[in-house]
Image (cartoon, rainbow, N blue to C red; front, side):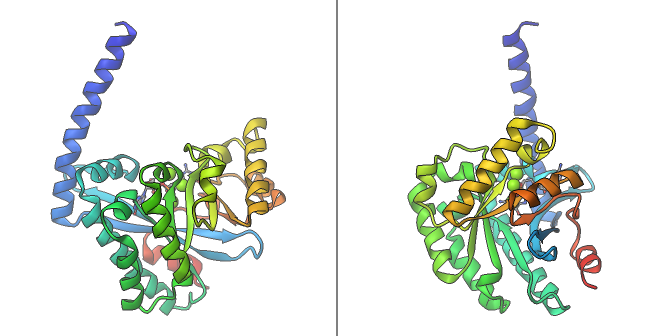
Length: 270
Ligand code: C2E
Ligand code: MG
Ligand code: MG
Ligand code: MG
């Protein structure tokens, strides 16, 4: 098989899976097979729990577990992200108000937002409405948007970030370092923090280039007055390096895996 055929057969496999996802998603929406899990974020200045990131899961008896990295692009393309995104917001804020009630008053919650929710879904108004409904302080909310999403509709996104900013909701750029956002573009957005992509953290203790990139991102963010958050920390050595570099917030399996509301609160409420 030559390279061209290999490429073609991969595409055929991908297309088949893409069509299958259509069924899986429709089936899962209809039967409520989505759920939310929560992963802890730890402040490196205080060493204390800062809050949680909310992450969606899909598991059905018929199709098993499908990861968000696979199904989010699909629901973004089909438009289903609008309904699913509404459900994610409602469920997350409902769970967050529960966390706060059981003695976690000072914590924050990070929400992943799709650019489709900004461009077609008026996500700002929806979030604000839910904050009022659940009596949640806007200052305890972080909105995460991937760096790659910025290029889609920069004006609309910039305006939405500004609206969040005015209300005191923080905006973090997710998977930072993997997209194409130039430093010049970054200046046009009201951003509060950069989440350094897992792929750089992965090599921070072993690969000179990853270390250099991480230290440059942190130094730049500090000069620009932005918070830095490291995701995907699995080893103690990675955490120590990030602490030395002055990174603000840490997240990863080393500190805690994403888990149900019940498990998360049981682990972190002392
Ligand atoms: P993300 O927002 O960058 O989330 C971080 C991903 O890294 C999560 O994968 C998390 O489980 C995983 N992770 C965290 N710590 C570690 C670690 O130490 N090692 C490794 N190997 N992985 C770690 P997950 O939950 O599969 O989510 C993948 C992506 O799907 C997310 O990346 C986000 O872009 C998207 N996503 C997840 N939930 C939602 C959601 O509710 N809405 C939207 N729009 N996107 C979501
Ligand atoms: Mg995220
Ligand atoms: Mg990320
Ligand atoms: Mg990611």
